[in-house]
Length: 179
Image: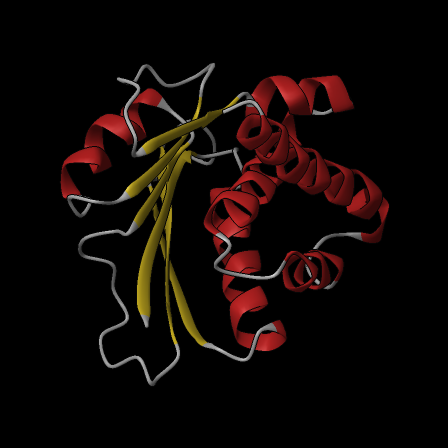
C-alpha cells in the first residue's frame, strides 16, 4: 500500500502543520512508513503553500508526491494548480467556501473555514479539514491523529485544535448519513 496525499492552500492556513501532524500520526501512532515534504512561497502569509505526505506499509524509496491519491485544497489557487496532477480516481477534498468546483463522485466538500469561525478561531480550519480527511478516507485511525495533535500543538491551543478536528470528523459523518 502506498498513498500520496497533498494539502495545498496559502501561507497562514497551517498547511505545513497539517501535513506534519498527518505524517506523525501515520509513522508514530499507526506503525506505517511516512514522509512529509512541504513548499511555500517567499511570503510569510498569503503565498502558495503545500505539504505532501507519502504513506506506505513498506519502505519509501521515492519520497515525493507525483500523482496524489488525495488532494486537499484550501484555496481556489491551490485547487487550480494541483487538480490537474491527481490520479484519475483521486479523492479531492475542498473547503466549500473557498473553492469553486464541479460536484462529482470524487469531490467532497466541507465548510472548514465556516466551522472554524463558529469555534471562535478561523486558524483551526486546517484541523477541521484534517478531521474531515480522517473520516472520509479512513486511511488513519482517529486516535492516531488525536495523539499527533496532542504532541504537536501548543498546550494553550490543544483543546481548540482537538475540538476543530472532532468537528470536521463529525461533519463527515453527518454528510454520509444524509446520502
